[in-house]
Amino acid sequence: MNEEGKKKEKTDFSKFRLPTNSLGSPVAHKVLLRVPVSKPSKQQYVRVCSDGAYHFECAILKLEDDDRPYLISHNIASAVAQDIKQVILKLGIDRQGNIFLWPIPPTPEDASENTWNQSQRQVAEMAETSWVRLTSNRALGCYEPMVAQGEIPEPTWPDYTLGEILEIAFGSTHLIADREHPTLLKLWGLE
Image (cartoon, rainbow, N blue to C red; front, side, top):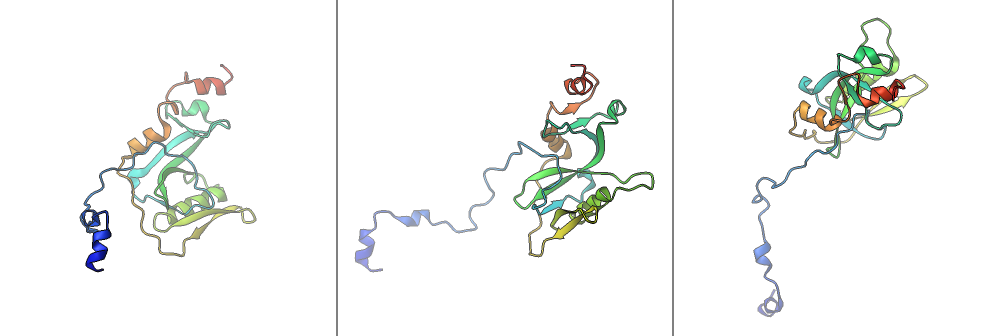
């Protein structure tokens, strides 16, 4: 550009020039406000954290009129045995970096095995090393994995402990530690 062109510029853009490596660390980080407890949708590619520190064996109660399940204390689980599911909550993440807790049915102690539960465990195990989608095949009576074909980068797991994640997922309202919890009283027809 000639000297005459420089005189016409109203703003000195040189003060906005910034080398790409000069920013350093970000000045903000994402704060978790919600952690869903659910299976991934059939259109979602997900990964599961392979670190056993992010796997939590527990019992949950899912009411039809509430999107969030309740975490049930082991000392009252027998009182609601017909309504709860024993699961292993495994930390999962989708391609957008949203985390969730996937309730995986545990391996039964007896020989009987539900093919849906067995295949869900197998897909979750595959998700520890590959990006997968959980799809159902009603004809076969099981879930099937759809493994991503593209080069998807490894997930960036958030810097939270399992306890912090459980606290966000269940809060104080979805923890049932005794028989006097309003949800149980409602379930039993006492309220």
